[in-house]
Image (cartoon, rainbow, N blue to C red; front, side, top):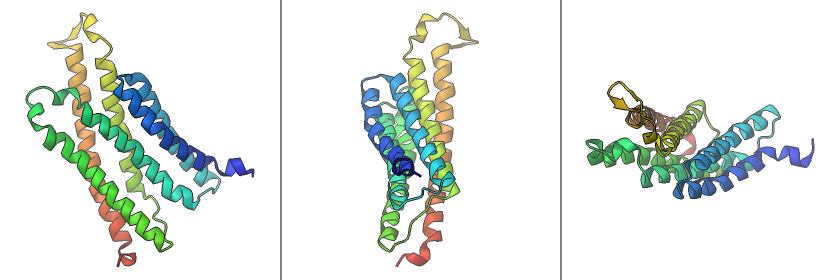
Length: 213
């Protein structure tokens, strides 16, 4: 097996770290299509490096540490996007008055959980113990991908000049229907993700309690 083939998972991990700030820059300049494509590509590298690592037994200390770090860098940039430009339903009454409680709080819970687990991972590494990702942690990661994707697709659709279309669904105009559908779906998955984040955080701590002094 060649040197480069053995390092495919690590190359994919590094590429995800590089893509993350580029994705954010395109978002800031309102190019939501390219931002969405880059976000999907970055998450695809996560799935691919995991596949190669397991399928061909290419698990390394580098991957065990930097693969979850790359995920957190990407999701942090995605959360910054949500902070700077909240979903449409949070820009109009009545939810515009509760953006802190209903949007930023669950996002902060997810970030805080990731900070604690990252600290735990580094602590265990000093004791030559690798904190491997569990199923519940992977579920949390994919749910994050899902609600961020919904958020980006909503922005992409709402900035596609939908007002030029003259049809509507019942009493709702197309742009309002999209805002409600995607906004409520985003909120539901966000809250589920924040709950699973807390549960998975306690799971990792409880599982490694014997190594924590």
